[in-house]
Length: 144
Image 1 (tube, rainbow, N blue to C red):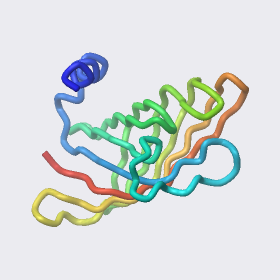
Image 2 (cartoon, rainbow, N blue to C red):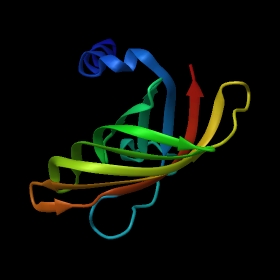
Image 3 (cartoon, helix red, strand yellow):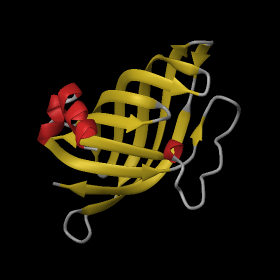
Image 4 (cartoon, one colour):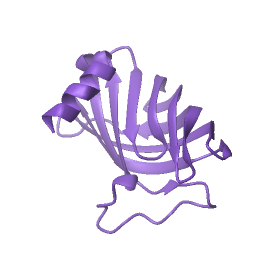
C-alpha cells in the first residue's frame, strides 16, 4: 500500500496540495450499452472512483473505468463542470481520451463532509476504435 501511495505522489505532485478528497460509487458503462448494475455490497473495484481536487480546482480522477484523468473544475453555487483528459480504460482496452463531468456538491455537514453526485463521460480512442464510457456516481467528499 505504501508503494502505491508513493507512486501516486510521484505521478501527481499537485496531490500534495489537495483541498478535497472525493470517494464516489456507481456503475460505469463499459461500452456495451447501458450502465452495469452496481455490485451489492459495492465491493467491485470497477464501481469506485477516487478524486483529488486541489486549491486551484484541478482534479485527478483515479478509477478503473473510465480511467486515470486530469482536468479543471468550474464551480457555480454547488454545481460544477469539469473538463480534462487522460488514460481511457474500458472492457475493450486502454487508450487516450478527453472527458467532461457535471456534478453537484451539497452544503457542508459535520463541518467537512459534502454529499456529491456526478455524471462523467470520456470520449477517446482505444484498441478497437472510438470508445465512449460514462459513469453516474454518488458519494462523499471531505475538505482537508
